[in-house]
Length: 109
Image (tube, rainbow, N blue to C red; front, side, top):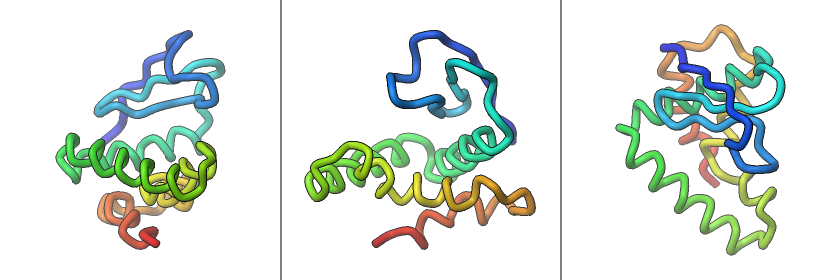
């Protein structure tokens, strides 16, 4: 599955280059690099596997716990298991869909 890429000028919010809201990747600025596209595709598979809404609920809960723990939005963002997994896998091209979707479980602390 490949995401639908949509270029916008105001979304995602400042500090982010792209955001995946199933099945669309919104990005601003320059076209996405292959690595960025791979990162967002990992999120696409995560969202699909968790039936979309539970993904967003878990994402928010992981972020909330991390923001309370670290008191820093960037550290909290990097602590979210879905993000840790996507950053870990973004440079790999040999992944099967199951590796892309369930790797976040390995990133739980």
